[in-house]
Amino acid sequence: MDRQECLSPFLMRINIIGGGPAGLYFAILMKQASPAHQITVYERNGPDDTFGWGVVFSGRTLANLRAADAESHAEITHAFAAWDNVDVVHRDEKISVHGNSFSGIARLELLKILQRRSEQLGVDLRFRTEVPEVEALRTDCDLLLAADGVNSTARREYTNQFQPTLDVRPNRYIWYGTNQLFHGLTLTFRENEAGVFAAHSYKFNQTTSTFIIECDQETWANAGFATLSDSDTRGYLERVFAADLDQQPLLSNNSKWLNFLVVKNQKWFFENVVLLGDALHTAHFSIGSGTKLALEDAIALFECLRDARDITPALAQFETTRQPVIAAYQAAACDSMRWFEQARDFMHLRPIELAYALMTRSGRVSHEDLRRRDPGFIERYEQEQRAGPSS
Ligand SMILES: Cc1cc2nc3c(=O)[nH]c(=O)nc-3n(C[C@H](O)[C@H](O)[C@H](O)COP(=O)(O)OP(=O)(O)OC[C@H]3O[C@@H](n4cnc5c(N)ncnc54)[C@H](O)[C@@H]3O)c2cc1C
Image 1 (cartoon, rainbow, N blue to C red):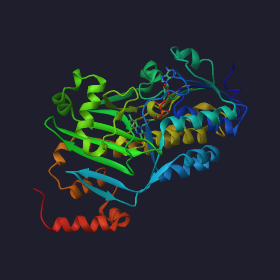
Image 2: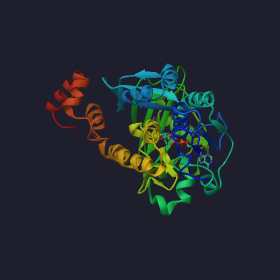
Image 3: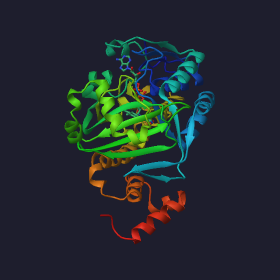
Image 4: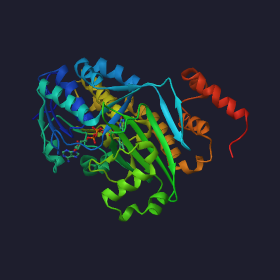
């Protein structure tokens, strides 16, 4: 097939590896703009299988989604749990910081909405279809989108072309759910004889909250998790967070201890293959941006391809325009990630000081920003600072 010939904006044959947020949303945008595109999504899992629990978005993302596809935006926002507070729990005291804007949604619910919208538009969704042979798929289309997540097969297959750097971080984390409802983005710190544990939790529907637990390698080793079964691990962590969970169990969804992987790629595309979402870059979950970035990547790539008559300049434009945005997010996420990696160094702080340190950890929220968001919080913080340093 002469690739140049079929690159009219009205007809492209697109193969997508991965039916996560990045792959599905890109399929929706392309198909909605030009129904003649032939788009196939290959997804190894079934339509109802997913990892993780809820994901959180900031207010700004939602405006971008509305402009890109009003139908899926309406459904997504209908399913949202929204809040404006970050709660920091330390030494049994809860400090609330208001004036923020977040929304939570079950990851599965988000995927179901995107799957329905894709099907409605005529995208060919092939579930339970593993792609073992990426090159065969690449040569069979005008554009191959590698939206196959953090452990991307395509990125591995074309490692010389993409030149990825994969940075395995030292902390361990495990992604649970719970029926205890946390009304706000709640960051809870608990210490025991093993070390320091941090939980990132928030309600994402009427009955369930995400509950991610993170600790450093030393704490993890001291607690003996290497040899604990799944239920003993949950039992241990339920005891650590007993005061927060109010007797509600931790719910597992094939939950396992992982090390966060920071993914970057020197090159974002080659010939007709482009990386998107977690396959391209990751941002630590403490800034809650991975899904948002995956969806916004899809919007950015779509905008570059929308009027293109040739793939290469469109993909080059995507890389040039999107790269600085991603670099800024990854820098903020990195500061945040490192803060949690050093959490034990902050445990001497008073609760209000810890909350302040957390809110300003990535250097993107200033003292004056916080005053605007929540004057009462800053007033109390300044008052306690005047009273003297923490012991
Ligand atoms: C603990 C934790 C908490 C998080 N919390 C948040 C949050 O609050 N907010 C937020 O915005 N983000 C959050 N994220 C990040 C978010 O989960 C990811 O950034 C997002 O899922 C990326 O979307 P994606 O489509 O790029 O990849 P994925 O969602 O990983 O989708 C990739 C898909 O590709 C499929 N696949 C992979 N290889 C193949 C193959 N060879 N053949 C066929 N199919 C394949 C996989 O099955 C998967 O469905 C969190 C991540 C973690 C680890």
